[in-house]
Length: 142
Image (cartoon, rainbow, N blue to C red; front, side, top):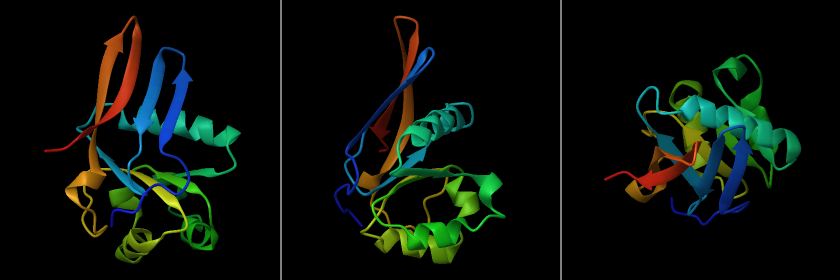
């Protein structure tokens, strides 16, 4: 739905020989990528960052039995990182997220259907090796 980021437009974090450097242009950023591209690794790095930042919250398939839906709906001013979003989110939550202007989302998965996103909001996870480090960035999907 092309809302500008409400929490942050940049995420940078380092973990051993890995670095995450994301520029966020919209309130919802959907990150796609083939198996083995590092999506789950990036999620774990962002989960570590969330331990330091009170405005970040992370959910994945392990949270399916928890009341993550209620947490999202009651929150304001949070950045939610959701791994395997296409598996975790039902149609009701996809619709809620699509119109939520109070929070920001990074959704990691394979299928953005039901999120009412434009092509501009869907990114591919990219990685490059630079001086012994793997740097993860986002690239536009064409």
